[in-house]
Length: 85
Image (cartoon, rainbow, N blue to C red; front, side, top):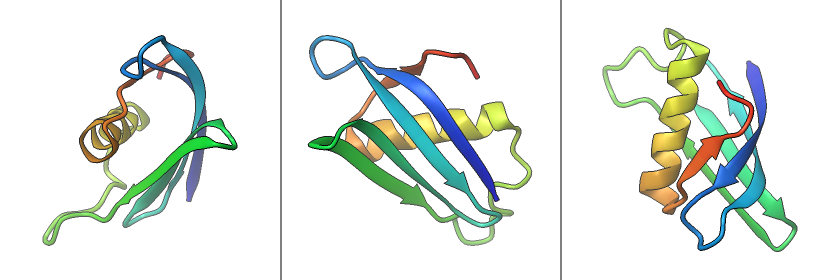
């Protein structure tokens, strides 16, 4: 299990807002939360497609880009990493 805790800038909700991305990466799945405030947060996750090797083979960079892509498609949340990947 790996845990990522990154500062992000949400870019598609009007003014740019600062939030926190927390991700738990397991061998076969992952779970993430984007937290802006107690009233404003979103959670999402992904299981690997059937026949896939999961997410273990991905570098940290590729994995975090995947989380960013899923956040955009599944939650409509676009963001940039403030502290790099």
